[in-house]
Image (cartoon, rainbow, N blue to C red; front, top):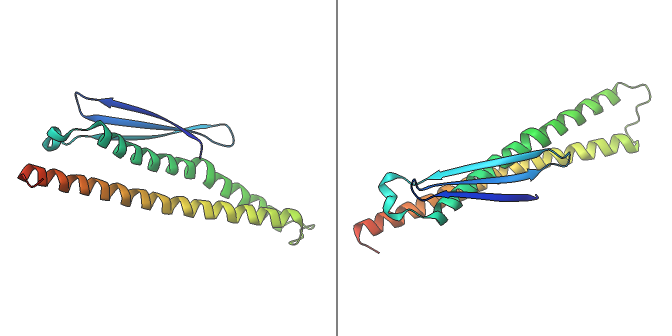
Length: 146
């Protein structure tokens, strides 16, 4: 996935924003946007690095969802339509190069969609773990158990 990253940080509010810019094969530009804000209880631990990491994870999730919705799913629908149209042709040959190629490409896109769904789950789990570990660390520091 070719992306470029733009990150923004506001020290006064403790908010971070990350924008991932991705150009599809058809030339359309998609933007994955993620934000993070420091909780008021954690303002003593406000960090551009932490906010940036959280915002980037969220931007990755947003971008993958957009790739699924605007690139992969429309491709699946189009290939299914073409294949169903071919099935009704009097000249249809299931062993033809065209039929085999469409089936393979459809299977590839469906695999990619499933892989992206799994990737989103993994990123969410990693993000949840990261936030939980940060929260546990902050609680220890607040209690003086460094």
